[in-house]
Length: 411
Ligand code: NIG
Ligand code: FE
Image (cartoon, rainbow, N blue to C red; front, side):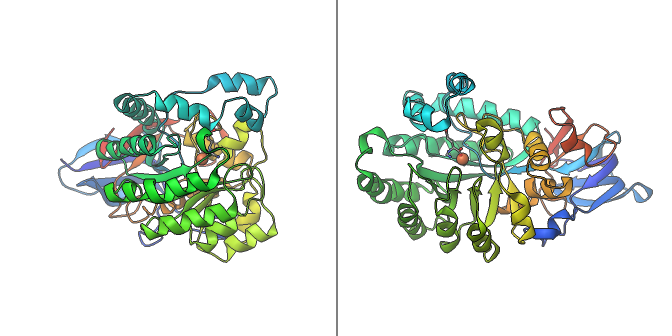
């Protein structure tokens, strides 16, 4: 593969040193840039960058950024991107006034997706997801976490995780898998929670570990789903198989999920639409990342997370899409970054760091992506020319991504 030189870059964004793995608190407002720049990609990696007055010499393929901005690819650290079918019928129920809980009680929700997935053959599930993810890549996503959790039986959880494994093999971006059988109680275990937890711990986990199908242990710690005590049991079991936690916590209530996650050294605790001082205190005293999912708040009409309190307490905040058919049907990270600014009151610099370097950290990918750093993967996107950095989140909904570069090649 020949080296690729991108010239005429209006502004090159996100030049953190390669050694910076995560950014917390007030440092999140610091997003180093270079104007009138170029970037050189070799062997799939960022080989060098500089300003137009000192262009490198040699023989390269050359591509002009036409004055646009270059951003490190979005690192979307929380998705449910493998699912059998959308659930727009629930969307209409929602418009008519039903809440997420009421829709779930009426046969919608996670169990609805599980039923659809059960009837979807593995090759079709894979093709659906692959197509869906290629659309996300065109919108700038260059690293992705995907959860199981619409299987809820041994067979179907394995089916989902094998689909994710195949996606890891064929996609040009890094993908991480989280095991989320503890997403809800399947019908058969409605009144036998201990039985389902037992199934997860003694049947699913050993098989998944045996096939090396998961990177993380996930639990939906929420009233009506998995309690904090149940979450702790599951995290302990996951740890025995070397799976660190990345969990759903405090989406609707103060579930104790944050405290449980911090206690078990979670890589991230995600959602946090509901927080209090104790939650912030626990996170501030930990290395756990707070991953906020404003697309879910936007879609469900629930409160937005208190990003300012977290940042002010020196917590590392990441932004992710939560792409799923029930509570966040969009995986467009440009929109997520807009919501981070508009609804979470994050500065453009903070939101961009949250969706790039901190997203990478929430997938333990900081050494290979999340910033424009020499030696990292050459994964970035080029925008149309913009008047300023703030224009990207400001112009929500505008398609600004002109060109995607992955592993040093035009996508
Ligand atoms: O992250 N909170 C739990 N899981 C998803 C919703 C899943 C669904 O409704 O299908 C979420 O919001
Ligand atoms: Fe989720």
